[in-house]
Length: 520
Image (cartoon, rainbow, N blue to C red; front, side):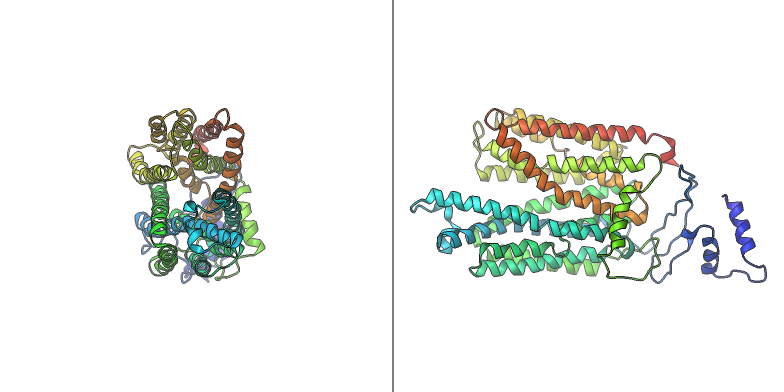
């Protein structure tokens, strides 16, 4: 149906003696032909101006509606910079928490199992009593088991909540999903403080990671942050914005791990706990005061606190099965597959640490920690600086991702065949871009869905981020154990095939999207 037919229908539907003076009346009339054109109430949503894209696609759907952002809303740069302190504080909190909770687990297991004093358990590495080596080994093994349980408790509730929260945030905004997860961090800090000051059973300490995830944890928080960035950015600046936020998160977490380890060794649990408890309070305050709520696109329903509804769950799932222009649905699935492969096979730090402990490297834990810290900071800064540079040089997101996959393959083979510290450092240098394709996949996914589906899509991405660590330990732990006797680096060779597959995915999508139907 063309515009002339639309005008004719509207003219017939209203008597001449009752002109439609108000915009609401005109929109209601137009809604009889195109229901989606009805403009929402202005006191609830950002002002919108309907744009029609002349794109009659395969499926005979109506022209796509593209809402505009209100004039007083933050621009792309401002919206991105608003998110940087949030993810930086999240990274710092997570970085400080990791060594803190491991040492608490170790101390409580030592005290409970062997009836040692806290002083001995906190310095168990230097314990020289009877059966010292056996006690140390048993404590380490028990700590590893309870830490694995801790990882599950800190991720499973997040996965459940994000399945509902993505759809909810598309209807009612991103601010609440940004603030709520930090309440879980505050509750976790309270539980951890109790465990640090009272001789509680080690398994009671598991309430700490569980409480951190009760309000969605870092999974829901990152879903909301990147949905917010996607709301305000365009194709020209989105990849730069996503890279800046992701880089800030990586640098913040690395700084937290370094600071947490140093503070823990010098001051015990008190100072790290204080910082870990203060950061989420500052973050919640920052979100409530400085983050401007996003307008809600495409809905006229009143605000609702009902998150865990069947509708939200089904809407969240439907975004991946929805029929779209050409092969767009397939492209979304392939980009998510590439993201999953990248998240899993970039998590090779444990295998790399085990390799460097052996000859010819013979690194100690401190040396490896410095190496990983420098590498993570370099990657974070590269994300924030090189992606904008590539964009200035007119490189598309997909070609940056292709270069990133090549960097990942070279780095994996370098790790596999390294026989000295020098060659290992060269391999790490070639991998400075290897994280880029995972980050840019997020930016490439955004224009493939409608504005009111961004939260649902970011929810799917965040789900992969939460699941990936479980597969990391499964792959690198099992493969390394099977091949360590004859080739410790073999797991990196196998991992490189995942990056080759990702490379093929990006090349295929780039080729397929040359079709003119995607530019209409």
